[in-house]
Length: 78
Image (cartoon, rainbow, N blue to C red; front, side, top):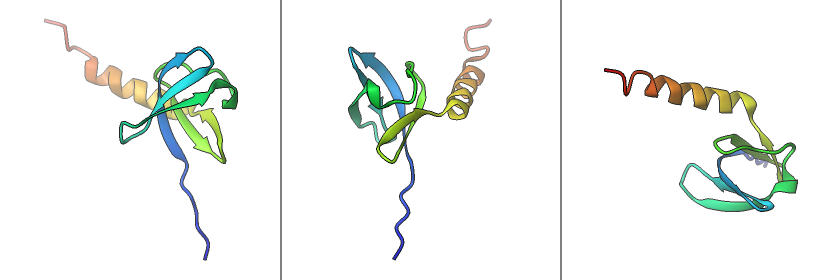
């Protein structure tokens, strides 16, 4: 029997010292050593865990930011 594991996605909540604080879709928080990332993540980035390493998903991050900007557009305009 072949078991295929889906990549796990997280959002970068914040960077603390040498750790990245990640939040998953269930609102669970985990701390990951920053050296396990392919490049320096930033707050709000979408991160994917694949084979016990982490990388920033640039496309998913852009999509998330565009969606938020679209929702915010005109919110405070009179």
